[in-house]
Image (cartoon, rainbow, N blue to C red):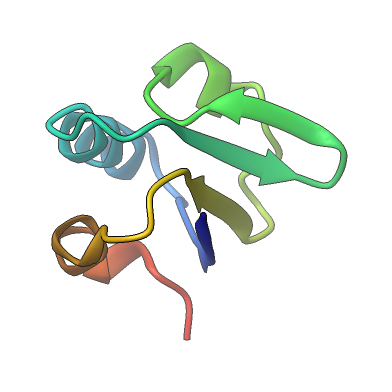
Length: 76
């Protein structure tokens, strides 16, 4: 499993993020504090507090292609 912080500020960013992650077969979750949602669910993402960075957890060891595609959303 790999995890890294991401930032989604606007509805258009959420839409783009979901379109990207849905291209991959990896299981992924977004974690904000104690709340966890499916990273491929646009409604789930909107239920999180997007004013804070959230953590993307990818349940795969070799997901460099996904990380590259999500570059604009990765914090740091």
